[in-house]
Length: 339
Ligand code: SF4
Ligand code: SF4
Image (cartoon, rainbow, N blue to C red):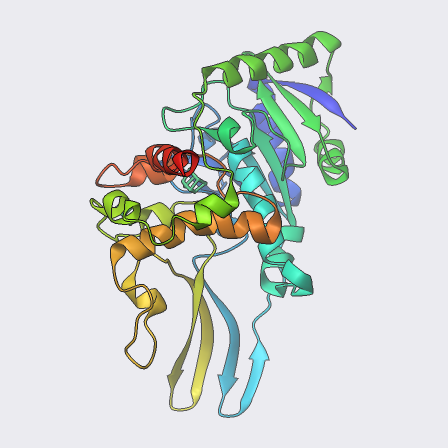
């Protein structure tokens, strides 16, 4: 596998070479801070950001997408040809989140063709974190500031250069096609390793509950009312989360012509579980917050063997009332270990 260094002054040339052959999506400054967007000017790409306001999941799982179009009784699917895409400079937590979404959208042999078409056509270049943000806790949930999960290439900022390490075949092919950079030395690789260790040392440890049976036993506990007290049910936590994947499907029809649309939805909204009968199995916000937490820390470990949180901290920094997932986890761990 290729291991290259590219001088910072040559990074625009690298991005141009990538964009000449594939669609390039990278962090770009906008009114929200830094967000992923299609790159038209490589000079606008920001690699000195901590993390984006929203995650990169929209690249493979759009907020809203048409699944099929219909007229009366006839329908045709809306699977579109996707141009091969390079998602450049995504943080390792977001890259790892893509590998978790892969598990959902291929679960039990039920492959989702809409998701898979995009995901299989997306090459991921992860950018190792040197300075984790104040709300980050990736190492407490199985990740790392220089983790490779979900990535095809791992990039590390070495000051005046970028180290690019291909970690999967298609990452290797990407670096080969770009034709920019020179072979890295052992000292470069060692410098990246040390940078990763220093970044890890900056991360605080969060004790999340791992005893699934005892966590399940909290289902009827009053702790959920306590934890949900400040929750507004706004959904900012779930919409900005790179691993949340709930969606709704609606038909938009006019005079027999229409389309079937899939849109993100969230367990934070009462309408999410409202039945046609008027019954709502999660009528109050404590039940909805409980669902969000148990889905990630109990049901996903049961179904997929992994916690569905990558510790990106977005739900913490985006919550308007300051609800902090780290404190929720610690409170639950306290409860579970005292049981
Ligand atoms: S962002 Fe905060 S207030 Fe909004 S739904 Fe999530 S936990 Fe509740
Ligand atoms: S639950 Fe919060 S910290 Fe965990 S991945 Fe989602 S947004 Fe990030």
